[in-house]
Image 1 (cartoon, rainbow, N blue to C red):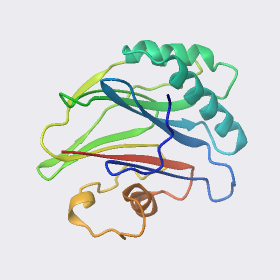
Image 2 (image 1 turned 90 degrees about the vertical axis):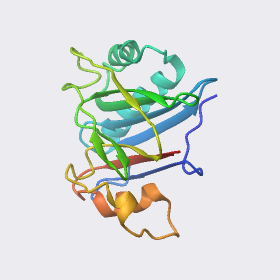
Image 3 (image 1 turned 45 degrees about the horizontal axis):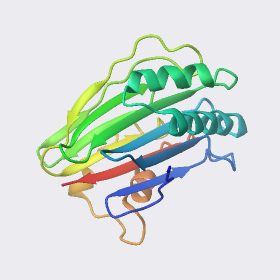
Amino acid sequence: MVSYITSTQTLSFARKPHPKEEVCGDDGAAWDDPDHTWLVISDGLGHGAGAAKATEAALSWITANYSNNLEATVRGCDKAIRHTRGVSLNIARINRSTKATDYVSVGANLGWKVQRSGIQRFAGDSGVVGSGVRNLKTTRVDLDGAGYLVLASDGLNTTSDVSALYHSTFDGDVSLAEACLERWTTGKDDSSIFVYRFT
């Protein structure tokens, strides 16, 4: 069963539409299979209703048809949503026992592993899911120790100092994802973010 998660003890999600729009073209999906936790951020190209329709199509297809082969999942989604304007997409599949995480990204979406010892930013592949994906690369990330896995759309500033997850005080009345979104959004696009805490 698919769960669209808004906030849990280890995972929080937030999104915000473009300042001139009421509909957000970004969204996220998170769910558990027997062995893994899955996180997906979809950013529909542009903003407004057309972007939202593209994101809805992408997330609906992935949550119904995903497989352990992330590249095959992305390619299947690419073919399934050709009728839309397309999306930027990133997917993380976290093995809850070993903490080994597979990550794939197409387009301008952002990903980081944040720990006290440093920050690892994940590379993505160029392209648009829904317009013919070419090169894809799955990255293996080990969530060793303790820290945060952050997935976001390009509505967040690419120079965001995500080390602030450790070195700054956030308002306790909002989720960590909401606090990050308020602090780092560009204010020029839709924006969305997952913050997953691992220990």
